[in-house]
Length: 322
Image 1: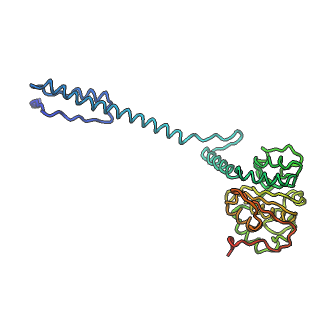
Image 2: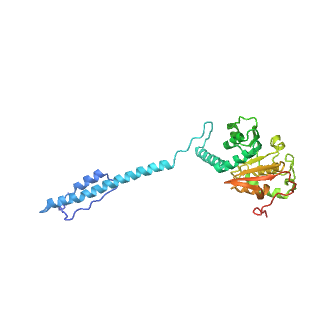
């Protein structure tokens, strides 16, 4: 048998250790298992010790309750700040959910970027109201633009769009409003080379009227025949998207719009998204800043006098190629 160890009672109140892993009930039982020496002031010391323990217990329980509340709050906040990704529309298929979510976000951002703001739409609708009934040509097809054909009642409105999905979801109820699908083969990343090509080649000069047989790389030669035959009063350039380097850019659309305008009498050419480099450069180059008559937000309105015999486009100092 091991040697007997004499029992020793300390005159000091034993330390109480709290472990986060022990429940409040276990801590309470552990505290009450400690014995205090009993002497002449045993009862007094016991009552004093109990009074000291009560605030500690209340504090411990309060801390545990607060921690639980904080944990619940953090969990709720995390759930609300990271909602579940929206499901793709019916008919869409995707084998990689993260890619689908990214695509949906990019498509939503693109839609918001191309949508006209209130003051921009007001400028455009006022312009068409002043010139209606007129010949209206629009590069691009957005829901907002369908109402422009109603404003242009009695006139001719033609939409040129490369997105098959947009064409399939939008219809018109007017015989004077038509939607054509066109292809833009040149990506936005080729903008610099095309601008240099236009400056160095006389075939791109404004005096060259025959777009359908033009050798200029910026000329759109595959448009419907009536686009080349009509004299346009208003031309709007808001397509193709041009929102990525690999996406079709608006270089050819702006150039072609400027050429069509110079074949008419007085043509208003309206360009959207002029906060982007390509739209700004090519508007300055082929529509000329001295022809800018009004602007709102990201919308510029150029008024072009037709039948010009100039052999050069304007050359802004801000866009000098070296």
